[in-house]
Image (tube, rainbow, N blue to C red; front, side):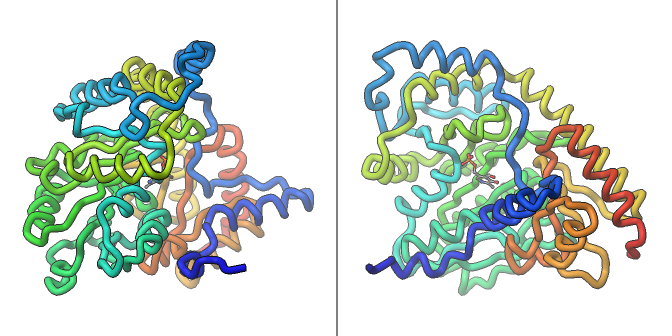
Length: 391
Ligand SMILES: Cc1ncc(COP(=O)(O)O)c(C=O)c1O
């Protein structure tokens, strides 16, 4: 039987590999704590669960979703209210918003709707591992754009050779950034819009951590003047409302790209279950306080991890976004070697930076999405197991 060649390009999904490793160790009786995966353990807000239950009881929601590929108009209106309230961004729910089955799905439909076979597509390196497969699936080639600590993990747009920029048709970016935790600045977003205009590059600004910032302003790509002329922002209910399993998000911005995404979706899936969209409206309209509570929780966990790392001898500036910490590995280790050491000595799993791209080497990623109790236990093990490390 033939399996498509395109699948051959795709490396094993990092988290599948880590999950297998964790399951094997657990089977062997080891009490493993995973700080590798970014999946909140706290529950979705109760009022959102109630909204789902109520909508699920209404049989008119049991049919194919309303306005399948675009999402229910009421959901799109709620997204517009959310962007206006939190970011001061105006969006037309009729043509500038489309519902998604999560922002990961949006990244894929952006590729199907915007990119041609043979195109060059810019992606940040390190970067979210979901982008490259979407680019390969449409027969295009990803071109890595380095993100370095000395530039606050923002890509240096002026260092992209003009030959490459001229060839590129699209650019995937994400700030607050997974994996580095870096946040964008208004100046960077202005430069990005100018760069996209100069080279006719469509921007896929993937922003599912937009709400998860510490001591800095939340920022949307759509805050930059002219952003809607060059791209879209993908956002998601997964991270701010602990709804990773619900599969709901939104694409917002350039009407032509939104239409292209919707057309691709119309021929692939039949949209998001109406009841989930009603629950999404409840989250977007009525859960601002919940986001604030979650941020406080992550902020405390973040401080705990940073305090332990400092005690162990680490010296580095932690970026201000996401529920991840991007931590340089001690001298003499690769990221994979250091993860192996932490696993052996502490039964704690971290994500190796090299899995996020060549420029991720030298770092590991800690996720703050475990319970306080498990995080305390992981840190206690690290204080004992790693105390002889030298920096
Ligand atoms: C940068 C980035 N984009 C997209 C996603 C997927 O989000 P969603 O659950 O909305 O599909 C993730 C999840 O970890 C992510 O880190």
